[in-house]
Image 1 (tube, one colour):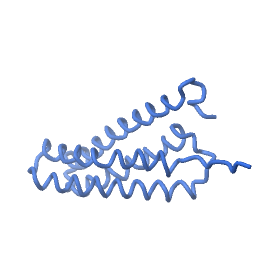
Image 2 (cartoon, rainbow, N blue to C red; image 1 turned 90 degrees about the vertical axis):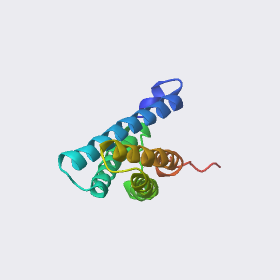
Image 3 (cartoon, helix red, strand yellow; image 1 turned 60 degrees about the vertical axis):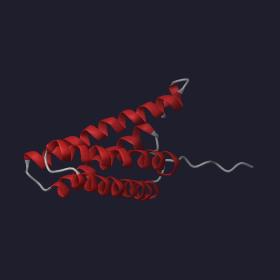
Image 4 (cartoon, rainbow, N blue to C red; image 1 turned 30 degrees about the horizontal axis):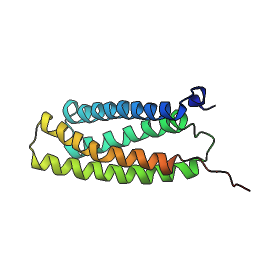
Length: 143
């Protein structure tokens, strides 16, 4: 059952929900990064990789099962598409974060600013890739 079909403006609610999940995923990303980086004293790069992977799993699960109601579609098709999109956006995130961190300095504030810069680049890539390709519903042939 598609949760958003109950609402008259379902596509707008779906967009707002996608954005809300993005905010939650971003907060989760920050939490994981800071936990590994500053609580467990992991290196910047390793903390960033853990944050990207764990937020990716969370994001895929929620968007597949709730946002796009795509549970009926093949995981065999969705996972490679999602991983491709997320791989591209994560690479953009990683490169941007690393470059900004090297430009700024070391320290909690600067490293979190680098994280924000990486997310600012990767979020639009992830959103449009998920919307237009990874979770796109198959159109039925018209005769």
